[in-house]
Length: 423
Ligand SMILES: Cc1cc2nc3c(=O)[nH]c(=O)nc-3n(C[C@H](O)[C@H](O)[C@H](O)COP(=O)(O)O)c2cc1C
Image 1 (spheres, protein in one colour):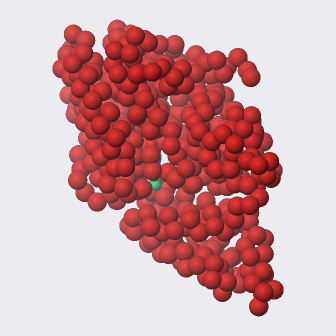
Image 2 (image 1 turned 180 degrees about the vertical axis):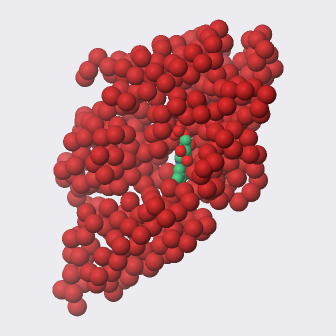
Image 3 (image 1 turned 30 degrees about the vertical axis):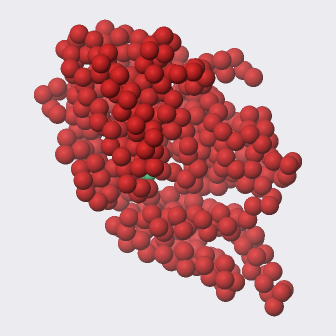
């Protein structure tokens, strides 16, 4: 284990009993970063976030400091902050640890962010199923309001910031930032064409900063320890630690906070205890279902945004799904396309029709009525969706489905041949 592993942001707090209560959070240094931030100049805070190399933890990995600097600094303009707590990407279960155990870390991060960017109102858009966590957040917000960490004249300063918790209604697409904004406005969650980006015209047409839960919850540590410290925890251009959620055929599934850039093989074999029953590893999805699958011989790779992109995949939400020799990749494909087919919002024809065509072809394979040409047609259809839709949902379908079918075509062919042998 390297020295870097001693430097963690979330895990030491997770282990403190009662940390979701404000008094316990304060006893362990809670809200000190907000006090410090209020003494800083606003552009100094943004500079620290830039120095930290913090990249968005929601999926795309966009540099947080840069995104903040796109917001207009004029305080006469009404602006909004939205925390994306939709956590809809299949395989992902990291944000719920922050929402349930560290609501005050998130609130503190939101208050610092709002102060730095000159925002008076923030929303937490939380997935509908997280009803219990929404209640925990509401209670924490009330506690923070009573102690003057949010509300009017925060800690006696001329700074006002309020937070509203808004529960989603169960659509995956509402995790996409512009669909989320539409949904928050009370409309159907259809993504908007970009530009304009939310920083220019977001919620109610006003400049809006939108970040993931883990991104915003990293802010207090950056203020306390400074941006370069945070940057030094991770790898080049990928600052900090990351909450990796490991699931599937490993001995110890769960959340592991590790430096950005930790080797995927090390995460699976050293931290998550290796493959169950000593079976052979078959494949890994490294960042939620939208991240193109890696074969067993492709997992010797640093888990950061750039390395995975180079390998033709994505770090995404950091959700690592592990499959062993007994897992059927055709079954993974079936689950994947049923999900995308169900969740496509239907706004763009390539995505609406493409997911339908692929689903029918997969059903044809499962019914043992398909030929090799049908398998190739899935790959072509998947490819034809990429770059043709308003939001990245279409790219995700195209890349995730196309890669899986390309890499495991032989297994699908074997499945079809088995039938021929039987008949
Ligand atoms: C279909 C789709 C679903 C998404 N779901 C989520 C989600 O559940 N949570 C999230 O934080 N980001 C999600 N995103 C990414 C958001 O659009 C956006 O990039 C993110 O909230 C920005 O925050 P960040 O820069 O801190 O990552 C999704 C994107 C797409 C295309």
